[in-house]
Image (cartoon, rainbow, N blue to C red; front, side):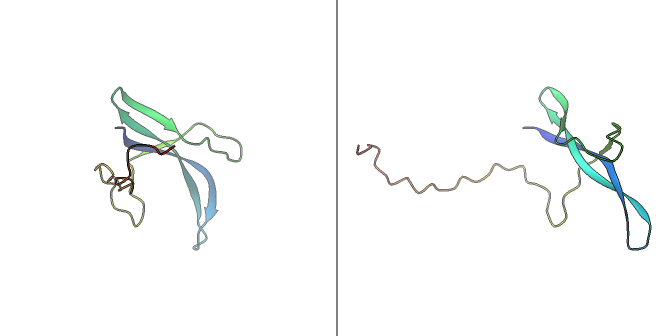
Length: 92
């Protein structure tokens, strides 16, 4: 199973915060994943920005989303389909 090693993000614009400071706006555009054949880059989006995308990106360690725990590596539980009591022969 592939594992996300790094997140790829870039500056897509600017905004002014409540204190009147100009700040950069970042967007996650992809990730670097570890596969059985080595690391691979997966781009999810190509950013649109004023002046066009210049090709420069930041590589960062993945951070858990707010309010979420680290994802579990356990296999998902199989839910009961409710069809266990059906006969095996199709009536038509």
